[in-house]
Amino acid sequence: MKRWLWILPVIILSSVIVVAFAAEKKESQEGKGLLRHFVSFKFKENTTPEQIKTVEDAFKALPQKIDCIADFEMGTNVSPEKLNKGFTHCFLLAFKTAKDRDAYLVHPAHKEFGKTLGTLGCVDDIVVLDFWNNK
Image (cartoon, rainbow, N blue to C red; front, side):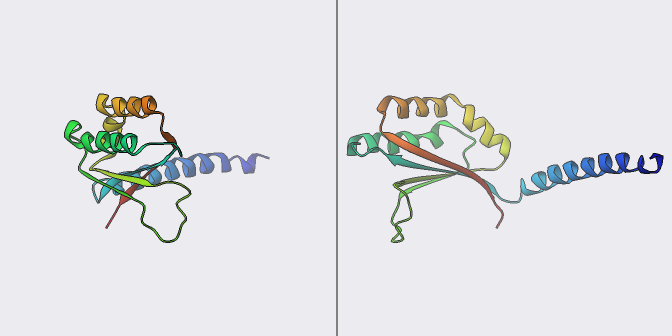
C-alpha cells in the first residue's frame, strides 16, 4: 500500500502544471490579437423598423461612450445559406485586453443599452461570443 503513496504528489504536481499552462496560454493570447465580442439579435416578429433603428443607433453610440472599445462593426445578415435561425443583426466589438472587455461589460453606458433593449421589448433572443483574433 505504501508504495502507491508517491502517486498523490505526482497527481497534485500535474494538476498545478496544467492550471499554470492554461493560465499562460490565456495570457499568451492576450496582446497578440484583439479580443472580439460578437453580439447577434433575433427580433420578435412584431418589431417595428423604428424599434430596430433605435437598437442599432444605441449600439452604434457605445464606442463614443466607452473608450476601451478598440473597434466596432455592425451589419445585417445577407447569407444565402439560411442558417441564421432568425438572427438578423450582428455587432462586432474589439478590445485590446480581456480587462478592457470586462470594463465594457460593467460600464454604465453598456448597462443603459441593456435597459433600452428591455424597455423596447423587441428582442426575442441574443447570442454573445467572445474570441481572440490571433492573425
